[in-house]
Image 1 (cartoon, rainbow, N blue to C red):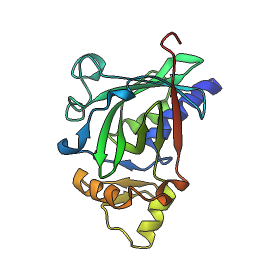
Image 2 (image 1 turned 180 degrees about the vertical axis):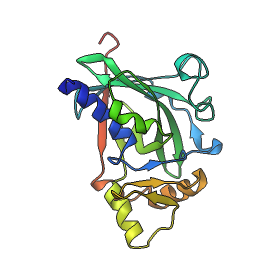
Image 3 (image 1 turned 120 degrees about the vertical axis):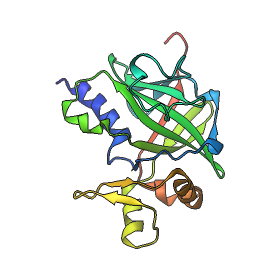
Length: 209
């Protein structure tokens, strides 16, 4: 497999693996979903050579999406397509929902489809969500909670949010949306959860790019 293809697989792993905190349930409920169409467009990562295209899909229950749990897609759903600028034919797609919790906006990601060779990643077909704090403007910034920070809270018995932990130490949150929202409301304005977490910054690309 080509190195760049492996790197794209890394982008997919980034949103559905131990690089970020993952959850069996979404972080949103109907009363917390919002639309902010400033996020729509073609964005270029300032961290690497990834391109993110975000749009409102024409339909949510047809074509290649019909096998996706229909409860995940709704009138607030955006479609995110990510690929490398040098290999646009190798892509991954996610449902993206914007969620308002307290003073902060979050993005909830859910894998939909991909067009890359990834046999060893088939287990990621499990319906898991990941989420990041997001700021939307002329640029968009995503910040993910550091898994190590969350693990320390569990070890110190500081939080009691429902979760499962694998033999390798990876954490899967199993709390329902309202419980997840309480957790994010409590820690959303703190900087420590994000200090050692992953982050991505994007600039809008010109329409002719």
